[in-house]
Length: 116
Image (cartoon, rainbow, N blue to C red; front, side, top):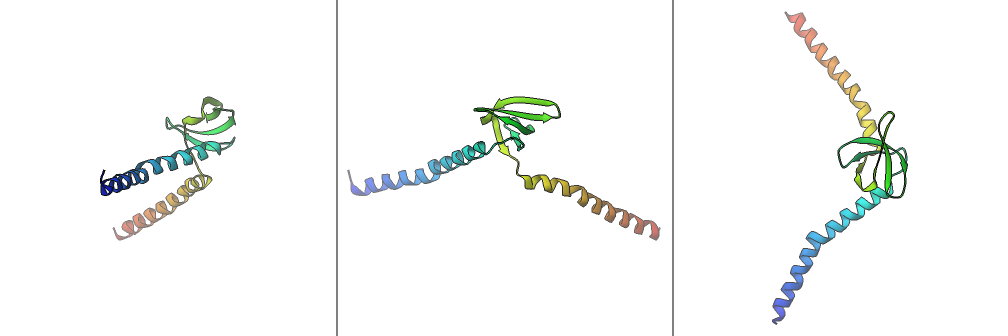
């Protein structure tokens, strides 16, 4: 076998490793870390798209409250994401922004009425 061909094959293998295998391992590690951080009181999104609050954690099961008084038991691996506390604060700020927009809209409407 030609040494140039061997080097080409090794470089191709290294490129495939960097493009496909490493990112997949990184995603798996991030998923495992996220699943290990699940604790009672944490808000999550399930793989099915449901939002809920973790009530208890067992070995491979998680009890999630989807609505007041409605708890479901699900596999831990069915948790798609943990909702950070910062997102909850952003949601509470939105009504203030809406009030500001309503004030601006009302102000513009009053100017139009004055001109008429």
